Length: 126
Image 1 (tube, rainbow, N blue to C red):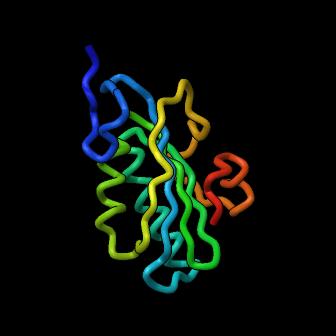
Image 2 (cartoon, rainbow, N blue to C red):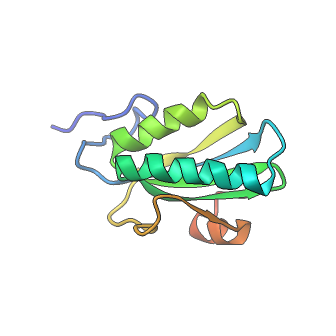
């Protein structure tokens, strides 16, 4: 019998073998220039690659939107970092759900435009 694999999303019945997608929105706690944003994406890309997590990030008018894909424990480890990251405020999870395949399999983290991320996840209205 599968047991919940996450502490932040106990309502899901995730096993360690499942593939999940997590999406969220947040406000930036500070001003972000393009250099700061690119450094953040680069660092996230390296961390995500080490955890075999893929995804996309969008930033528009002081709002972040992100989709992460991977094993529940790995996605949740990143989620915990985001929740504790002082660069984010008003962090709102749009939920974690089981998926069959990755939509962003080739990107450990990619910066994309608002229109692209909303097309991938309509709830991500940033």
